[in-house]
Amino acid sequence: MAIDVSTLNKKQLRDLIRKANGRMKNIDKEKISKVKAKVDALLKAEGVTFAQVYGRKRGGKTGKVPPKYRNPAGAETWSGRGKRPRWFLAALKSGKKEKDLLIK
Image 1 (cartoon, helix red, strand yellow):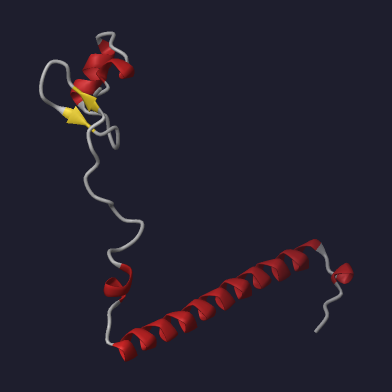
Image 2: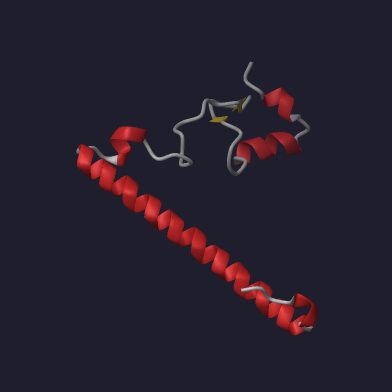
């Protein structure tokens, strides 16, 4: 099925592109579903679970991160991830620099 795109106007071309993109997404979803079914069947046949084969979930939280910064006025620490703690912001406002708060 060859489509002569030279005869299509702008609206028809946009519609064709939209339909083609939608079809490509459907093809990808179908392929992924087939692969998942094959993997599930293999795991079931072998009597193992996905977690046993690959360990914990990938891309999730990786656990506790060691602290990177320490509050000079107390025992609080911060890993440098997530929202900055109040003590960190207060120290910056008082003139300290991030490198001054680093744990050495």
